[in-house]
Length: 130
Image 1 (cartoon, rainbow, N blue to C red):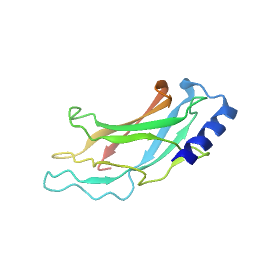
Image 2: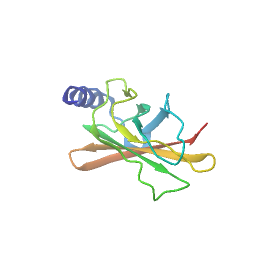
Image 3: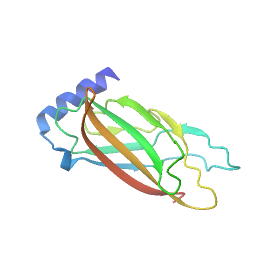
């Protein structure tokens, strides 16, 4: 992870991106459908980040069910990303989307930091199941 963080810092120093340019997208990937109300722990989706704020040394990911916001799905600790802004699937685990009785909308938030200071946040939403 330290190597990813160093590569991220070097790439971002050259971009000069601002917090307003920060965008995230994700793909659910091949996670199993949730059955029987038991929420499994699954590998993280793949993420693509664009316009990460200059000076960022780590990114933290957190998922929220917008239809049931009190359920804690978890997310990651602070991670580095690759030079091209991708984070492959399975880098961390979280509690799978498991909407009772249909489709829910889920939102991933990526928080860019340098040390403990937040430089920006980006959010992306998708339905599950799609």
